[in-house]
Image 1 (spheres, rainbow, N blue to C red):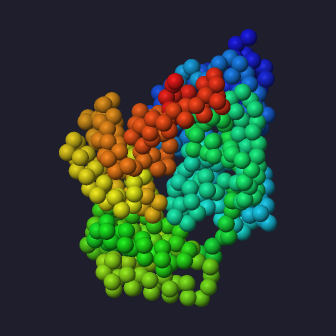
Image 2: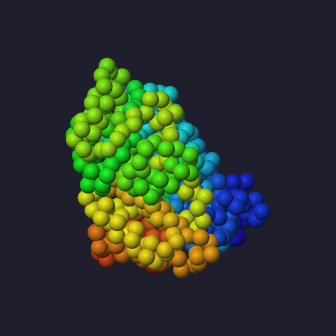
Image 3: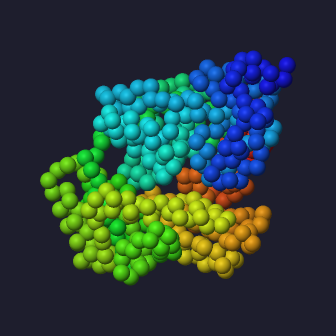
Length: 458
């Protein structure tokens, strides 16, 4: 009996083949995938996932887990010989525990659905990404997603208390812990968070919830240098309780997106624009304190101007520029996601921008970042006529060589997948990579889980 026949016998209509396989299973948001998989399995329960993996492991059949397909590293891209396991049917909030301030959620649940459920219960789910409407909780965990609230609440792994995952041989490893303190040996959940589906398939998680803020105050500031960006961050961290976002945009990025959105915030385009956001508690004087802080840093010369959003609509206008959806219309767009020591980000961006423009004189190159969590993003685009199969590799070589010189990370929040796999040694030592391989071999001895991703094929 073939692997497909056995899967159909076990899982029935949950197994899709031939023209029943949607084109969306071809590639994540990087649009680098070119093949449809041999089959797609759409399990409805952890038992289904386990049954599918038992069969696939016995047949030595490679498996690629897929979530919302919003990744940018090719981590969910299948080959024609692979079978995809899509978590899209495993959706729902199983429990919100108000006393423990936790949410137990299935892996296929869209992030925005989980956020809304938390809000309806009077809590904040602090994981927040621009792709919130389509990304899924399981994918967020598998890539250890970052996002805009990291400065206050940490990356995804900092908000996970318990986890359930299925190993390659079908073993269900379930530890749906709700306690913040649980010091009982190895923290097994951390093997799966950030592993991009190479060690197991996440099926369920217990997430930490936070008190729901009464509101938010948002300001857009104009600054003259990266040194001022760092100095303002330090002041904000010292003097603004509830600081929940600090987003910096270089002039190339800010100017491009303002023009694309038909917006003008400052009479003179600034060298840097920063969004500062503060959670409020509904107390008298919250706004006055925010205004006083901005007035003081203006008087001290750290900023040249500041606009405080007077409505949710105005705040959304600031964020619309920051989210930069207009960039998606650029040809051959490459998004790079790096992490560097905060003090080095300005120097890196200057050298990196010069090197890319030197190699590609007509390219669009712009920078933005969360900064407070050391994360820098680069948007690179060239005309289709100038793009070929070597372009991405040349861009990566330029950028990641410089990342290595600064002792930074080639991936802050998008993962490694296949697009960054060949550059992993720019950020991790040979000893570290060897230990990763040993862990992979221990948990997936037949190498069926997302083969070729992160570490490559052994």
